[in-house]
Amino acid sequence: MDSITALGSLGLGGDSIDLYPPVGGNSDHVQTSPQLVHQSNRTAIYRLHDTGIKVILDRSPYDEQLIRQLLHEQNVSNFLPESCRKRQVTDVTSFDRRPALSFKWVNGITLKEWLQKVQLRIQVDLDVRLRAAMAVAKTLSNFHEGGAVYNCLTPENIVLTPFEGEYVATLIDLSSALVFRDGKKIDVDADFEEELKGVDLRSLGLILNQIFRGEESTGGEEGAGPDSGCKDGHVET
Image (tube, rainbow, N blue to C red; front, top):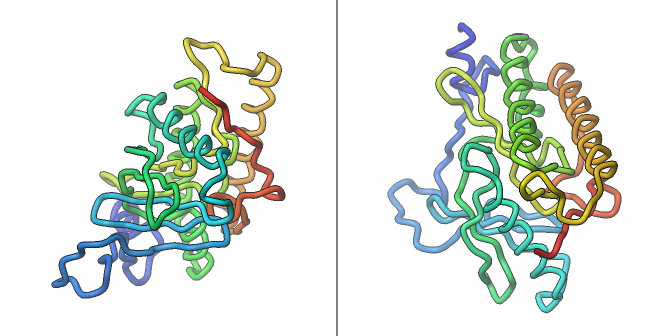
């Protein structure tokens, strides 16, 4: 299998990996309600066709800070240009009587899942690892160029998607991101800006090490919290 063919199945060799599993079971079944696709102590993610719904579980639905967090994610998504691969938030809404975030679904698998599949393969081409690493670095660079620091780069927060023989990486959980306007920060000074960019770059270094060594870590949207290492990016705008 050459590198391009390998990338078409996530570049992991062996059995093909289904990137786009059917939602709701039987492919003949017409899905009419959102289906739970992921749940942790912190969040639940639902999917209905090309729409995703994120619900926060570890906070009271009447917590004003929760509403501000979801609005913050929407503001970050709207602020960044379309060319920047991030979760595209479409609305702050409600689901099952709780505040929720609706967004455009991104096909692919998280880098965490990718790393788990790498561990199951005896050999994975260096070229495949390099393409995955370049995709992550490019998206983070686009965030910085677009005026934002991501602030919580973990394998759980990165979705890899094969595209035209390459990978593209999408950063999904925007709750810790900080954005700037017209090159100026909302509420942080220049030194703190550089510190946050440094956090992103150090996190990128850890991510690259995991990609090339096939190791895993914890954190991200599945488990971000006080011990995750992700800084608070909630900013009222």
